[in-house]
Image 1 (cartoon, rainbow, N blue to C red):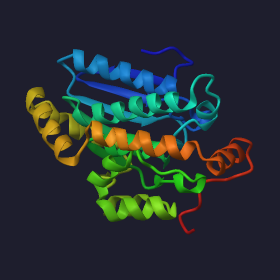
Image 2 (cartoon, rainbow, N blue to C red; image 1 turned 120 degrees about the horizontal axis):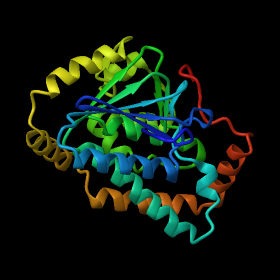
Image 3 (cartoon, helix red, strand yellow; image 1 turned 60 degrees about the vertical axis):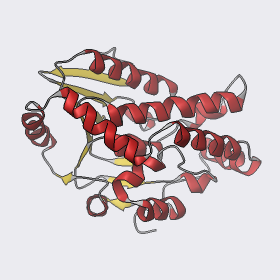
Length: 262
């Protein structure tokens, strides 16, 4: 289990481990604390051969709003080196999800944005309720979704990822299902996981690991893609116009998420 103030709650249930992002007041942001908590949880799964399914859900109306910009701009050390380290750690998390020797399922009930799209896309199966919606807002800040792009491309293809990155237009749950970002729309997420667990319990972890590794390699989840993301984001975050837009957002004067109709 987890402490009350943790950004991540763990709940074991038989051969399933449930992870819940638990900072709803801030939109469950991708900060160091959450990323490290997720890495620790994956360590636990890798060490426990009885686990066959891992679920990832979130408390509150937002699944994940992406990078914690307040933390990103408040670095006390070398900004570029700290950024590169953060990109490596996040990319490593997504790649671990894509290669973990269990079936990883995302349970999405609300808004998913920016880096949160990477968490969803790195999962093996994505279940979403009809009110969920999805988007890439990075271009509104002068940024690129460099880290999450390989994972999104595997799910949606290049054109859908490119259009979302270029226009910041959001997808509703039906559109996300149509393009492959979501595998199944369902009101009863618990029943969806029950059905998945019945299938997963018949599978061998080694076979799951081999299958996931094969397709992760095929999709290009490798150090080269991580290095491209590092270089791209380091250059962009060093740009004064980008820094100004981030500052406006942190101060509350820039609303980054357009509606689905925009």
